[in-house]
Image (cartoon, rainbow, N blue to C red; front, side):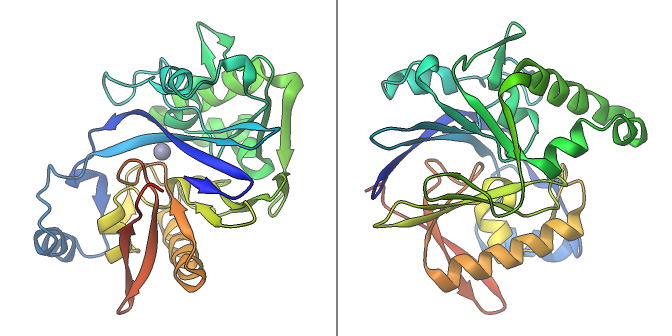
Length: 277
Ligand SMILES: [Zn+2]
């Protein structure tokens, strides 16, 4: 998708076998009714895991890196490396990796066999996100099933330790690329506002886990949300912004390749896919 000075390319890492149990509250019956109204059965919610390549004449930026070798949601992941190759980019060509948040399907692909994959890249992430996952006290308070998430985030950030840049809310992390905190899914979850000159794009990362359901019912929680209420608040704020500005959006788990627009629909929203060009 051309964005003026940039061109953004969707890289499919794999398909997450999401289904109805990943989504919850505040009104379970209303969720079922909405899915039926949209023609979506309980098994019809699989979501892609998508990373994005952002290129200009002098920058090669990777936005998230997919699951890599991590076995969290079954087989079939770790295709970002091959997708990059198909786009004509070698791992050593990537100058910057911007991490939207430190979940395995976004950072797993940063390491392979314990070694860094993107040997020449600076790793950029929100200070609030790094601070949470690298905090021994937070890890100690987290439930047993979340310990692996902390360990993986720490392993990856340590591997890139001399090249990690932690940034504040609103930081310009590349020319025309601004990182905006949208806490909830994780404490330092961030979206990217990309201004390529001709066109703007809001990369919403994990604001949506079902483009259809989350636009229709922005308050629906998702299983991996650290703070579902905060995530819903961030979701509504970002949907308002995307609808008001009419900007293109992209998402990590929006129907591949993930480019579209958010439109107002009553007191909620609707997702409208964009053509690829
Ligand atoms: Zn995700």
